[in-house]
Every structure is written in C-alpha cells, then in structure tokens.
Length: 117
Image 1 (tube, helix red, strand yellow):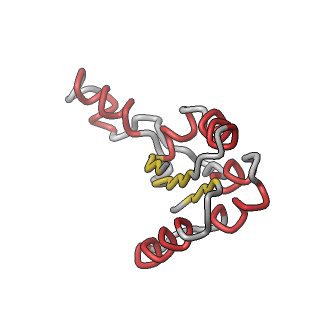
Image 2: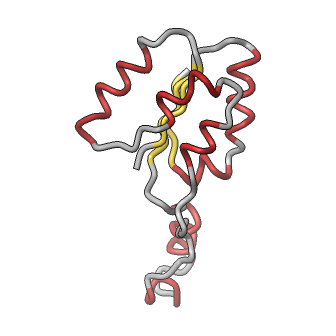
Image 3: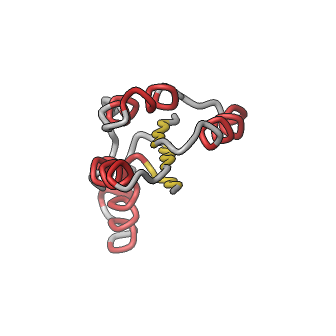
C-alpha cells in the first residue's frame, strides 16, 4: 500500500488508523507526506466563496502549521517503530526521493512512514 498525502490531510486524517490496519493485516505500507506546512482546502474554500474577501485581500487564511508539526515523530509512534525509524528520519531533497522510495520498497513487507519537507 502506498499513500501520498499532504501534511494537512495526514494530520487531520487520523494516520494512526491506517498504520494500525497495516500492522493488523501485515500489509506493506509506505506513506510519503508532502509537507508544505499548511492546509490548503480551507484557503481554497474561502477563495471559492469570497474571492475578493478580507482574507484574499490580506492573503492571510490562517492555515499555516507554524510551528511545524513533528511528522517524523508521528511516523515513529507507529507500532512498527523499530522498522519505521529508517524512513521516518527522511527530510527530503527532491533528487533523493526516487532512491528513497526504491529503498523503502525493497526493504521487505514492513510498514514505512516517510516525512518529507
């Protein structure tokens, strides 16, 4: 199972549930988190309803994750802690991601969580 998810969806999507299911059914899982340090859906909703509203004019939608969430820490809290540690520390540079994904998929049928910046 491969999950490509933004940081907002990851934080608000109860990631522990999917990690538990992967452990329960011994399903190989790889989670890649695109971390833009914000949550875009509320911004897009506000712009759709009020494209010239106060938030749009000020370019301030109050959707920033500052201070940054500890996404690798969330990954390390998974039940497969000893095997997740390798991938959870990844803080990506774009050129490294392809090698990182190959490494995770060749590491065997274990759960993986990766948190990129």
